[in-house]
Length: 115
Image 1 (cartoon, one colour):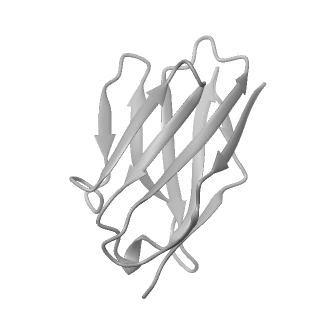
Image 2: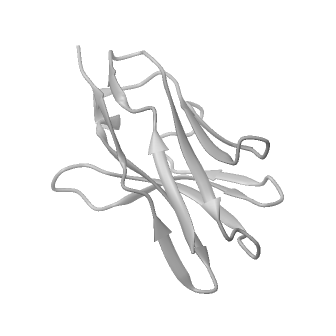
């Protein structure tokens, strides 16, 4: 079992920044990828960023150059630094991974970008 707990969401103004964290616990051996997804009302879930256990990263086109995913192995967190926020970034952000073909999700944290 893998447990994921997100934190750090809130309200930000356009152009502002937020940092999300995903606290990881449980069995994490044989996990190769950690991801942040987001889902806005009425829209499909969207992959925001992914980081591998070797540190390789990929980003969704809409967040490239603004968001940075990272791992803090000392704290067992997967972090998402979000800069230059725009209203279209408003969504629930969810942490995800998979292990032996089983998907694990956190409960999500809400990000609202509004003036």
